[in-house]
Length: 277
Ligand code: C2E
Ligand code: CA
Ligand code: CA
Ligand code: CA
Image (cartoon, rainbow, N blue to C red; front, side, top):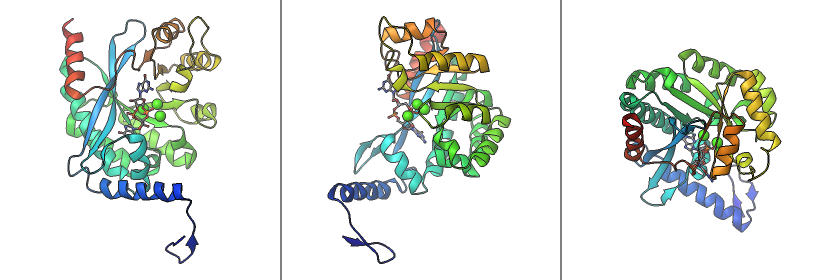
């Protein structure tokens, strides 16, 4: 047992205590990590399913902590959100991703997607931050895609809608990430205007060889087409999944079958290869 700030005794299970300790340690190391240059981005290709040509990339954050070693975003992003550090980190991600995409413009007209945390859709910072990253890099707004999850929309839907509206007014494209895993996905589609639906990889993983597309995948593709949205399948690992998705007229895909997240130079080499092919 230990005393919390209000002198109440809290009892921790040993596992909880270890987890809380690990989160505190992460948080300590996250302070100043942007300034110390500990983050980098990797870029996962997005391909058109019809011809497998590269249409863009998703920027994914990597943290090499000198003390903790490499820590994945699934672990540190929630800690950064809780500690109020996510705005600073996202600011860096946006500037870096936009600068990279701008430097790649001469190699073709591809998009760059950046993940935005749930908490940021209700913070006043985001729109200004995006506008600054675009202006600073010279990247056309239409080449930037912001990926938001449905959980970002449930807390304060009015403010989230206002924020998404302001982002679209800049000309940025919006993608609904992990589509179908959240609460009330269909209601969100009515309330929030987006450009891309990203079919969650748990549904893509259920696409089995020699069977029709699972009803949820089929339904999401049809829904997206009806609404005039791009439908992107994530987590495509097997050839039969890509084939069935293409036959089902899903537009684009990402996954280990095509490419893992790549270091900047490797992503650029891929673009160059396609540009000169
Ligand atoms: P996400 O946005 O759903 O990103 C997709 C995750 O799936 C990535 O993990 C990617 O490496 C992984 N992945 C891609 N293809 C495959 C595949 O074929 N099979 C499997 N099993 N996995 C695949 P990663 O990079 O570890 O990122 C995890 C999550 O962390 C992301 O999920 C996103 O929610 C968050 N994240 C990553 N970068 C950022 C960032 O810059 N900002 C914020 N706020 N969150 C980020
Ligand atoms: Ca994403
Ligand atoms: Ca996703
Ligand atoms: Ca996810």
